[in-house]
Image 1 (tube, rainbow, N blue to C red):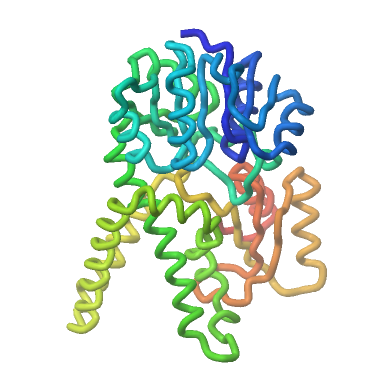
Image 2 (spheres, rainbow, N blue to C red; image 1 turned 180 degrees about the vertical axis):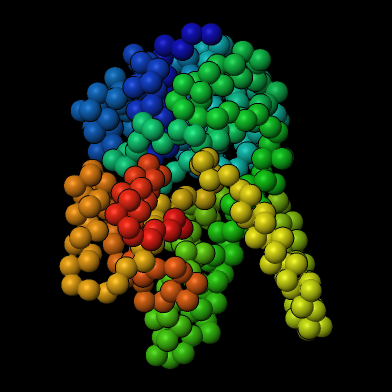
Length: 365
């Protein structure tokens, strides 16, 4: 099936990045967009990424070969109700939501379901909106596809081809498995990170000593707690059954560890940490996952005048952009004192090489 006309509903980070990737990498000549934010529409038009822009769906959107729903699940379902009886018979509809059961079950319950295939690109940044979108966002990122009863074999072929051409890695699975996996590796970790931060707020001394010392490793493991509360409210409510099951398993595992401590069971405590270390060390570091990478390095330096400027000059003179640079005051488990935040993984590789070649000890986080 040839794709000539694409509509993007929702020009946020993912929708905007898809728009740019489709334009630049597939050379799609007709890309239409719908977004309530007129500023995003106007920017996409001005930059030449879309041919038409609207604040609501209309006949022009119905006349598309492929429609991406880049909205929360609840909104996507509302759009499907509006689109299903009005789009072309050969139009493929897909979404990008991070939970799949709710929308797939809805499609499967319809009397006359559209040619819908669920999608979930496992990519993102800490920023949002069309202004932050990137055409290379999906490079080396897994892109999950979850077929429905309305999906035809050729629809899967079309989506797999598109995903590969925008740099992603397509994986086909069912919605139940997808939501269980994402509950374990993304949704519950966000809950745990938020719980740790709230715990510090609850247990802290009146002078805020815990918050003062809560830097370094604590900020690393709780970084994802800074994500959008509204986004995670929607995610949790749309995947609460799977999340509940994973949380119960988490609590059970914590209780097992508590028993190890109560019994002074040194062997089991050591095994607990060792198996976690071995599994953590075996995880691939050349693929994007659901949790956004930090893109940070730690540099072991001596505190002397001009040292920060020296390192900044080395990186800047070689085209490496620094997003943030600061001295880590709480670094009990870190191997250096200068923490540098960079924009992407390529910048991390370049920075490590440049600084290591000049004799600095550099560690990737």
